[in-house]
Length: 146
Image (cartoon, rainbow, N blue to C red; front, top):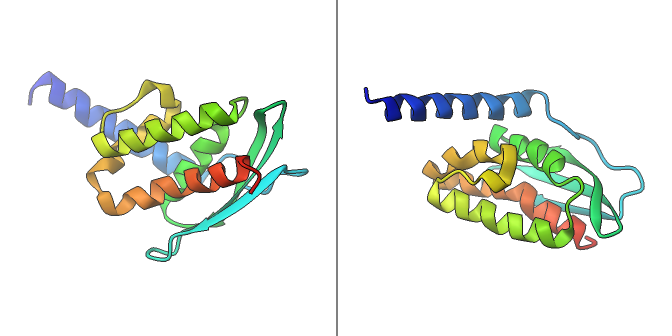
């Protein structure tokens, strides 16, 4: 096996482990006290449901949390996302959501997305794209005052 194939397989295994860690021990699971925005989303095809709550101060996310249930992809995305967006402005989050969508479409990891790059492999499973996007949709609704 060529070295590049070994490296790709190693990265895929590392990314899969990160996803499972976030699924098993999610960060920021729970509603945010004194939230300035709360928004829920559901995926009727698979049963995923999520509510994201945020507290925005001075135009940036001070705190984010989520409640809900669903598959490992949805839960891991929500865990990574609620950590990743802290301190970011609403405009930044909107631009990053577009970058995340582009990563899902291409399968190419985007360093601007931090730990969320672990989800690049989801691109190979189009039926799971909605699972990865659901927390983003809930977050966007929450930061816009949902």
